[in-house]
Every structure is written in structure tokens, then in C-alpha cells.
Image: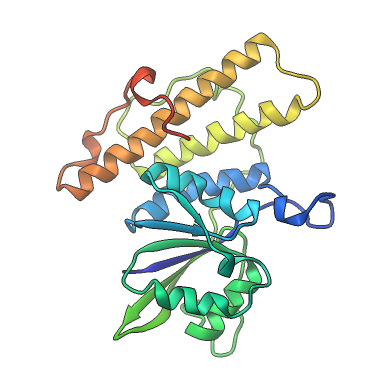
Length: 252
């Protein structure tokens, strides 16, 4: 049962943030990365989702927790500057498949304790890009890094103006295609909200935002249907887009 270590997604510049750094949120790029992580993490079948209390970490794993119907558990051992405390947390989770979202310095502690894994030579510091995933496996009670997945590449142009006007695709989609659609919808949602801070949305823009939220709910529902089908020996491709009245609120 693997432990899935995620470095939080993109959260802008530390130096440019004027508030408490614990409250620094994900950027638009970061939200797109978080959405794209959903099918990757969900494929492992985690039963717990843990996070540093820092906002950028909890926001990174909220989408996958929502898709799996799990709560995000805050763990101080994953917080920035927590040092080697993470090692004890991970050892206590042996036998559980869990997602853990943390920071670069804490990930460095993990590598020091359990090895660098694929993609890094002896003594070489592994790449610690935001949004990266490392998989820890267990053999005979010993944890070690067994895989490293690079962050999803997010397009620089997030202005998908047509996203709010169209419907969730009716064709059969696999998890990666659903993640792509979530990526586009989240990007448009944040473009709308961020562009109108202090100004407010027009009536048409509010209607567009409502449509986006419904479509996101439908995407989360599709992921849940596909996961349930896999767990019970069914065909994930039998999942269908369900009406708004059925899926409303799945994103929360």
C-alpha cells in the first residue's frame, strides 16, 4: 500500500505575498495542477488524504479528496519547518494508502530517510518541482521511494472563454480527459472571479459561473462513477454524465 507524497502546487511568489505565508493560496496555474492530479492520485485508491495546515497544501489536495469522498486531514508533521517529524508520521501510516501534501523542505527530509528514488543518482538531490508526486513503497516493514512523477505541464494560456458556455462532453472520457476538462473549467472559473475582484460580476458572468460550477460537479461525479466501477469489477467507461439536479454539490 503506497504512500503518495505531493509537493504543493504552484502558489505564486513568496516575496510578492503580503499576508501571512501560511495563508498564501494557489495560483491559477496551481489550481490547474491540483485538478490534473486528481485522476493520477485516485488511480492508487487512497483511503486517507493528509496535508500541511498551510493553505497552498490543503488547496492542492481538496480536489482529489472531494472526488474520493474523503476529508482532508491536517497534520502538523507536514508543515513547513517541521523537520524530521514527518518520518514518524510516514512510518505510522505503513499499511495505508494515503496522499500527503507537504513542502519542499519536508520532502527533502523524506528523501534523506527513505532514499531519492528513480531519476536521481547517488547523493543527488531529486527535482522538487511544485506539483510533483513521489511514491513510497513498503517491503518487509521498510519504506523506500519507488517512483517519481513530474508535475503536469499546464498551458500558459488559461483563458478558455468557451468553457462556461459548453456542456460537459457527452462522449466517453477516461480519467485523463476528465482531468483536462476540469483543468479548463477551473481556469475559467478563476479567471472570472479574479478579474472582477472589487468590481463584481455582471448578470451574464454570474450565470456563466453557475454553469461552470454545474459542469465541475458533473466531472467529479464522473470520476466517482468510474472509481466505483473499477472497485466492483465493472466497466469504468459505462459512467455517464448525469443531470445537474443529481450531481449538485459534488465539488464541495
